[in-house]
Image (cartoon, rainbow, N blue to C red; front, side, top):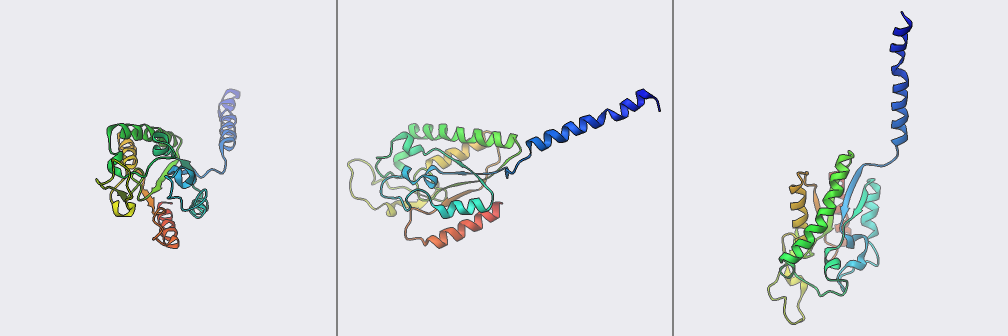
Length: 213
């Protein structure tokens, strides 16, 4: 074997060592699994007044996410940013207008940019967790009643609950599709409905998280 040949054969070893060094430098404990969560689930102070079921956050929900090593990406509250904390209770038909939909789409585009960057880095968006019954963030149930509007009167919100999605959730799904990304599973927690047993809510939620992880 010539000296030149020896140098050629041995030249790969430093490169391999450098590659291993870089890999170990970037290696850490992150799960690379993210779930996007509605703002009020992490901070109930964003909810419309009168509907907060817990003081700050629903700890049991986030204990479940922690057990499954999920990173939590909090989404903006479209209602708080658009109207403020002291807003009236609204049904979907009051929010279903061009101005609010445009605002929701702007909020959604920022979320989808996160999803796009996570995908580029090899991470997985495992799901979107939202608040069922909300006119904005409802996943399987929302609210609609054409009697709402005009001068404020005493109306029963539960009478306005219908099947369907909130305005923001509709815009978020459209934004994901328009970017050419896979739409992750969406799940709505019925935390606003105090007639629903909390243990049942948490048990169903645990089943959902197991199914996506």
